[in-house]
Length: 209
Ligand code: PRP
Ligand code: URA
Image (tube, rainbow, N blue to C red; front, side, top):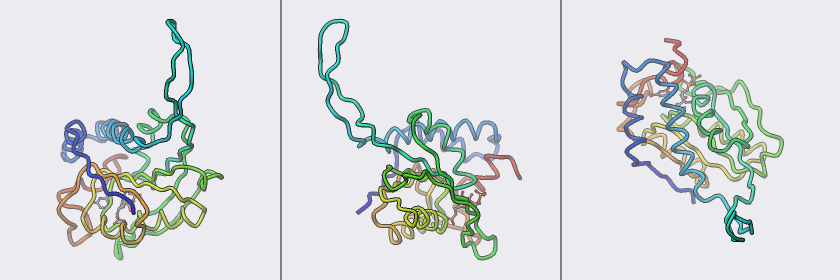
């Protein structure tokens, strides 16, 4: 059974608060997204396997723990998920990056796929799907469906803001997926936008509105 973890770290809460503010510019929004992604990635990678190896410090021989080299794939859901990639790559620079392109139909709110390109060995990687918003959950569920169809198994989902409806939909459709959330909000409005939320994450990142 996957876990659902809501971050309560003050640095993350502070940065998310700044991202919510409608006066925050796209330039600052992008910087904050990168910083939050880095902080969250720290926790999401907490249980990566390590092994003991012997090295020599300038003083003596000693045993230290090193990552065993489990390979990671970061998979942003286009387009807003792109805002998380740079921050995560700073922490795990050898990760491969796949992309899933989805947009929500403005009338039905159902996800529409337009792109999917994943690392060839996706079945062997620890996968971290990233998207700032988990609203109805339709996009996350569909993205993880595609990843599973292509062999993905060890899947984690990381988002900035989640509505209860989205968490329920994702845990029901993919109970094996671990979900990491910076802030859990109250509800969706009649257009399936998160309240209080931060508005349209893609538009805020890329300044398209
Ligand atoms: C946003 C967001 C998620 C999706 C969440 O993307 O980045 O992918 O909505 O909503 P859901 O949980 O109800 O599916 P959007 O469809 O606006 O596309 P964009 O990133 O291209 O702007
Ligand atoms: N997508 C967004 O970008 N924001 C929301 O609040 C809901 C879906």
